[in-house]
Length: 181
Image (cartoon, rainbow, N blue to C red; front, side, top):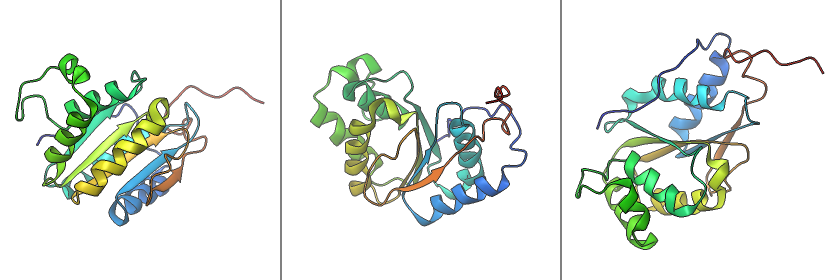
């Protein structure tokens, strides 16, 4: 499966230690969440970290942008599309995925991921935290080869979750300078 990691826009200058911490968490656990405030650089760090470990996953890295997602149905449809359900066993557009019964869609995602060795990146989980935590509980239980890298303002609260705090890293990653306080 091809990876769909977004292109990084800046150099990770000065962030080797953070990237090493994330990489270590990814190889020692199955769920790593980058936590921090909006603008701290969570997405950029996730892009860099996923790119670094891509070769460790036989089935690649799949990216799901959850920023525009605000409910459980759309979360499931977005994750389904990210892991290749569209075009896998059926050609189901995302609009139809949203209308499917939740239980059926969760089963399809679990079935799709069950035999894969994959890194799934879920970016901006804070919009659908409880639904995301529930879905991750299901898919991590049924998919032993799955590793998840999530970004969220807060921990997701899933058993086994490792959190890596991202504090003020945005300036180092090329974001706009922060005003003095």
